[in-house]
Figure 1 (cartoon, rainbow, N blue to C red):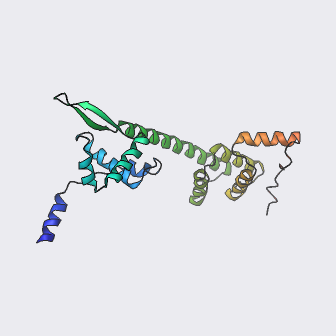
Figure 2: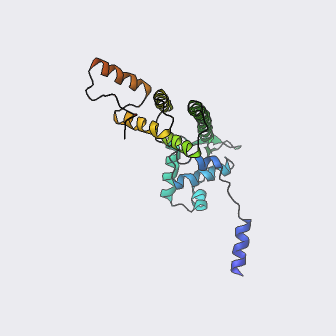
Figure 3: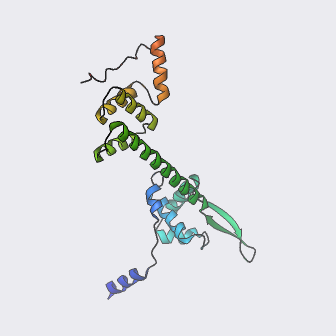
Amino acid sequence: MLKKLLMDEIKIENHYTVPKYLLVYAKSLGLDMNSCFLLIYFLNHKNKDLFDYKKIIKCLNFTEKDFLDAISLLKDKRLLAIQMEKNESGILEERVDISSFYEIIFSKMMEDEDNETDNSQMYDMFEREFGRTLSPMEYEIINGWLESNIKRELILAALKEAVFNGVSNLRYIDKILYEWNKRGIKSPDDILKKEKQEEDGKDSNCYEYDWLNEE
């Protein structure tokens, strides 16, 4: 009988909605589990309730320290603000404003959309230079470079170097990028600087790398 009552209570319990964008961007926003739970609470209430921290602690099964740490993190990240508003009786009340959270999420979405466009254009350039469609594995390799924070411009410079030497495979380009990284080359501008240093004889550590004969 008790089990049935508990099951019935679970079924009628209010459920919170977790937006997909929070799952996607939680890590890049630097959120921990408790701050995510607290943000989910605010997203589902959306200023309908007063800022009643005792009610929130009970609802989320937080300790007071859990709550204070989570709210501090969200405020430090500028994802929410606590504002004072007058009610109909003219009494000041605390409410949560999460409008900045939506602005940050929108900015991240737009940035990702721009990155996807840039990535698509880069894939197209590889396929044009190679004269064929990239394989799924090749897409993964290129994505791996991007995830390693190698600049698109540097990847394209390595592609240009490979095409110049008549080679059209990513293993060769990966070696170029690896060798550039060892030499401290992080951008196409660094390549020009290294070349000038070599011409001026000021960089004894620079050398012309023999890509084609590399074992």
